[in-house]
Length: 619
Ligand code: OXD
Ligand code: MN
Image (tube, rainbow, N blue to C red):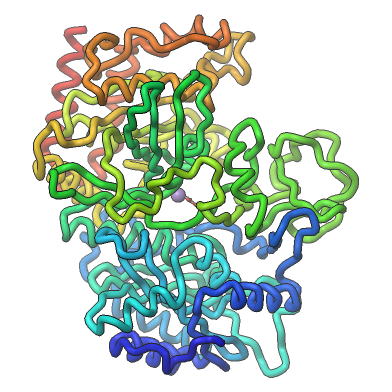
């Protein structure tokens, strides 16, 4: 039996939902109960509407195809609508909240004609955790309900929490695909969404409110993820003294059975999900996953930071995921998974570029066109069989290396925080910060080098695209104030209780060395466990394999047992301090990066630059 509006006993939720109904005018309203029966019913509705295809080869898996105008997050249409523009800061798009509400209200008026409004009670984080937070998403998209079912704890179990406490807080999240249906009209196999100029993904930070219109895809529409768990949660975290971060969480066990917990922030295309699910190449070590995208960290009574993964699933990028790059992700997505914009094989399976085996025969590409498989695994840009941002939505509990603590309401105590980016030069394989504030500095300069593949502007190639803390598109307030918040967190406990901070770089290149596959000086993937092992030992207070350099603490060497010879040769080079490169790096930060934040830049970060500059001059 479906739930109805009468089942909502929480007065503020009832009032808000009724206001949304009056504005959006759906044909019907369903309160989501989160049951399997409901999931199956909604999936069948999508199949009947021609939006989903059941995969013959995978148990309870379905493929959706979106429209080319709706394949990714749209940063240009994402707004932090704070009362003051300065509070959104220099790196967010801003429109005055009353003006934006007026514009969006006009779009929302009657936008759900011909559709059902689903009211989704959801919880970000394990049920009953003091770190978790609840929300209500109303949406007119069955695809969103199905994905939220996997990505969050949703349905009756969360409604029960609200109904038991009329004062229970919730973040209201309104979503519409922005495609009302006329009488007798149906989607007829076409992904519903609005044209790009009508898409708005808006966060109102003071009201802790999300309004999203016009997109049905990923982070634009599954509002628990980037909108709530990052953009709104960063604001909550600033106000309440905790951290909401775009970070993976992993559990690392050494051969003695000792455990450390590590979080890590990496810009996109740096293998964050792969690191979260890594299979170590060094014997006796184990990596287990707690989360692959978002970490919420709060101080425990003991003064340490405890992290939870607010999500319940993985919304992973499919292309490039193979048995070699991430076997655990593939196994996670073997059943009960939603695939979006992947290619479909003749025998009813999915396929994508970089899946690790060639496609055979004919494929239906992500645009729905039947084409012959290309002789090579790689299609020219723009002609891929699967969209480069094709996704799988898989339940985290299906991951073979999910840690038993992943739903622990208390969270896990964090020992180390990693930052990283794609840096072909300058940045060594690993270094550890000299202090918390130095670690904040390292987070603030995170970035990846712009390559010809990632830009159409040739003049940008070789420059660094800075993505501080890998959270630039997801921070709900002024980034300068966010840096300040990190510095404040460092003062909230004693130094020995704070996680140690490391900067890693798996992507150093030597294009002239023909022995190195792709020119990469480090093999990455499972061999990153060699770096994790050093980080583990540092967290254990090991002083036997460390040198203090101008830029921080570095290993003398790493465990190289079984490492291919070509990397044994490159290792000393990527464990060296490139003094001249770092001087240029600091100059770039000083001249091109930090000035953006004006008076919001904490003085502590400028002091760190001076300190490192001084040490480099003496090196
Ligand atoms: C994501 C992202 O989808 O960071 O996780 O873009
Ligand atoms: Mn992400």
